[in-house]
Image 1 (tube, rainbow, N blue to C red):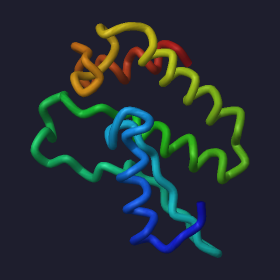
Image 2 (image 1 turned 90 degrees about the vertical axis):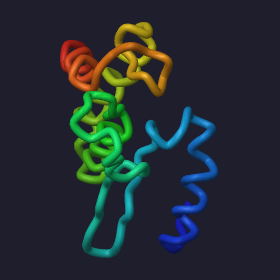
Image 3 (image 1 turned 30 degrees about the vertical axis):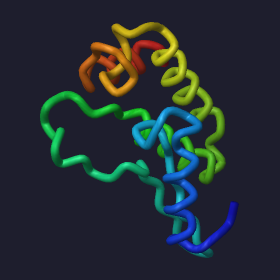
Length: 114
C-alpha cells in the first residue's frame, strides 16, 4: 500500500496483529531519492540492555532494504533463517513469542542457519 506516513503508521499498527505483533513487523519508507528501513516498534528503552528484545522486526526490515537494493538472494537467505529459527521451538524464540531465548541466543540461532 502507498500512503502518507501518518496513515502508514496507523495501518501498520492495526495490521501487525496479523503476524504476531509489533515485535515482528518490518517497515520501509521509500521516497523518490531516499529509503529508510526500520522496525515498527521503536527503540523499546524499557528493555534495552536486558537481552529481552526480539530482533525479528529489525532483521526483516534489513531484508526489505536488501530487496530494495535488488539483493534478493541475500534477503531470502536472512528471511529464511529468521523464520526457521522462530519455527524451531521455544528454546530459540524470545519471550514475546512464548520462548526462553535471549536476544543474543536468538541472533546466534539465526546466524547458525545462514
